[in-house]
Length: 308
Image 1 (cartoon, rainbow, N blue to C red):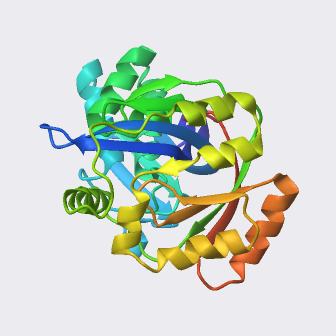
Image 2 (cartoon, helix red, strand yellow):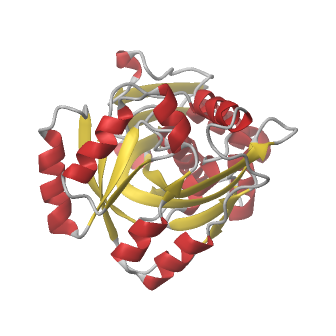
């Protein structure tokens, strides 16, 4: 196959810099007010013409590692079938995903791959779907998938799928430390519900508002941004994985401006003062024996976009 036939899309990871979680809704989801920040850690999705669908996963967490299925249970496969049904075209494509975003790390790698697949196959098949249609399809696939299309910084409401870009000034430098094995997102939400029910954390009538964080993003102050970071899931993740307290403490002891779990964890997102400080912080955290993977990243970056 000539490489000129290939469509290549980068899919960025995300950090939840604010994650306010409301009560469990009747539909089984929690009401959210979350602020997503796309960062410079990317998977790559390549789509080529094919007969039927095929999917290959390589890189960190690829199928060879037994962590990510390469069949119709994968969000990438489901995204391809969903777009084909929407556009009325055959679901014919060979898909290759190179994973650099750690699996089950609270960084929405699978959701990012699904968003990138919609973009790649829209281009490969010439379906010319409107952006609003792609967002609607993305929301059918999962709560984090629409943000994968939007990127940058955005406010997510509903169950997180209703995404609105927000103003942010400047770039932020982070060090991501993945501590141990992945955490199940449903398990973390379930633990939060139990903690609220038995009084271990305050019960709520709605998700905590994101306005303090949004104001900090507009202001551009690292100190103000750090003070406004929040994650309602963090106590539940720590209850399930008490060892993550050590990981957070390691980031703080190494001089991070602030540190929190990204989403349901187990990734620790450590905010650095600037690019030079991020390099120093990454080097120090790589040597403490707490994290299996350490990456220095910046954000915001664009959402899923064509690169070839």
